[in-house]
Amino acid sequence: MRVTIFGTGYVGLVTGTCLADVGHDVVCVDIDQAKVEGLNRGAIPIYEPGLEPMVKANHAAGRLHFTTDAAGAIAHGDLIFIAVGTPPDEDGSADLKYVLAVAQTIGRHIERPVIVVNKSTVPVGTADKVQASIAAELAARGAQVPFDVASNPEFLKEGDAVNDCMRPDRIVIGAANPLAVEKLKRLYAPFNRNHERIVVMDVRSAELTKYAANAMLATKISFMNEIANIAEKVGADIEMVRQGIGSDPRIGWHFIYPGAGYGGSCFPKDVQALARTAQQHGYGARLLDAVESVNDSQKGHLFELIQRHYGGDVRDKTFAVWGLAFKPNTDDMREASSRRLLAQLWDAGAKVRAYDPEASEEAQRIFGEREDLVLCDSARAALADADALVVVTEWKQFRSPDFVRVRQALADAVIFDGRNLYHPDEVEAADLAYYGIGRGRSIRIDA
Image (cartoon, rainbow, N blue to C red):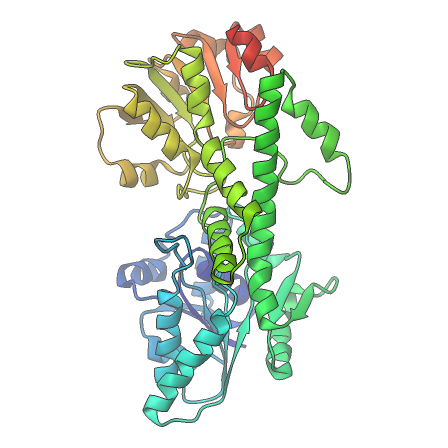
């Protein structure tokens, strides 16, 4: 099938590549000339495991194309996907200017029947706005071209997006026209062979499903961080509690790991946007507000542990920071917990030696040159001349360090574990003080 995708960001590039990989003819269009030229040379603008070889292979095979020519791309596609960003507006609601700009462009150029598919994460009712924008442009041209607008939200996890796209848990299709549903079913048939993954519903329900899914996962994270903070106060160990509740199949093991707060491009903005949508319809989403509030507070908790250990004075201390990305297997630092921690350390007069396997270039772009920041090329290099170690991102390579060597490198012999990667007994056996998230041990060490 002939597919056009507006947007070569995270969602658009992964989706377009995976559709091309199963044989569809895909054109990805973007207004960023430099990005398009880079993609045509094989330069991938994001780090996502497995994506680069797929892009290069499908581009070389002639199934995946990149262009800035919107009119040509629209002429190509029977299915036209909108996969552009929906950043938070000043009030936290989703900013639809990029989505509606694409809709207007489609309305100016379509000459034959098409199905327009919203892939971007958008508030309920956005399909109606896209429909109206396209119709207005057609009316201005005096043209009558049949088209449908469908919702097909993405459920991709950064760091595992290619696998999620190629082996989806579910494929949600929201459409009013049965012909649009059938065409999308045909598009996704290669991903739907083993068992039925397609869930068909109305457009508004599909739009809400995406927000509801992310809000549910964010809620689980904030709930566990809330319980972790209680565990810390009462002297319990949240890791024991996690095992005790995760074994209940009604709760399960996913997203019940306490930590330094969630980040990234999805959870923070989607929880806010859903709460603002509810507010706009006269409903106060108190649980969503609480989820956001707990997460905001949790991002400062690592610094609280550091302050506790040092009696509130970290001036002239140097901290080795392992992990800058908001999660492993990505270079994405949007809303990352590391950004809050680094700002707090710098404001308190401390210095940072940081290492991340993929996010160093992004950190350089964000922070620029600073005397109080050294971006290191290895975890071991970050320990050099450091007083303490702070683990912020749970990259696999951080999971089994040589604690004796860490102890020898650190002047103050203390680890602040923002992801509970380590067992306190093992760390303390190397004569290191240990602070985790929600582990009663962190209170006893400081007593």
